[in-house]
Image (cartoon, rainbow, N blue to C red; front, side, top):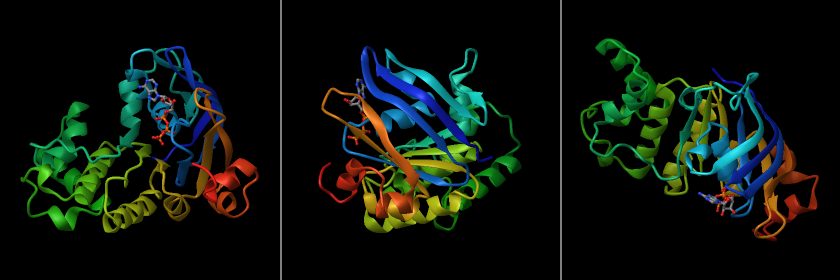
Length: 259
Ligand SMILES: Nc1ncnc2c1ncn2[C@@H]1O[C@H](COP(=O)(O)OP(=O)(O)OP(=O)(O)O)[C@@H](O)[C@H]1O
């Protein structure tokens, strides 16, 4: 299950534009790592390199290494589809398949991976994944109803259930609460806290209180000026970053002096 991610000398490009430069970082398993920093510094871009989603944009590429338990995701011959199965992703806006039932939403990824399963196994997987996403009690009597009939917070938990149904090693979350109300946000934060016992979790967030609440480690990204590449300024225990950061830029950012 949870795996360590080792990023070495990673440069990330959109065509000729170097968006993020020189990232070195070890992301620990069974922990939550938060990525913070001002708009445009490359947090989401970096996150998408961790499951090879970056390269779906034409011209987008990387140089350097991303190792997940010693396998370089960018080595020749590595299948990006397999990578995305092992490293799942939850997006900013809940994106369940709207006309699909709640049940079918949970197993959508599993079916895509063409794993053949008996109905009883599928039922168990749906129940286990919805329980894992703290949604089971709310939906168990309406599994055949469309996913779009759920509240925003429930839809996001449904997306998390869909992500964990394929049994990934890592779960990436790109601002998973930014479209949610405060109560749904707290529900997702509780869930993140529970999920970390099984997965490596990396979350991009604009909300520094959220980073402080949910994460064990925090990486602060910044950029010197518009058009310059983003870079990782500081990466440390969340408590240290928020109480006694090593860099002035980090301190200025977390104390609200810029960004
Ligand atoms: N599809 C794209 N094509 C070209 N450049 C892009 C693309 N997506 C992002 N960029 C550029 O890459 C840089 C990093 O963007 P990114 O969205 O990763 O930053 P971010 O820190 O996640 O920002 P935000 O907090 O606003 O979401 C920016 O200069 C952005 O304009």
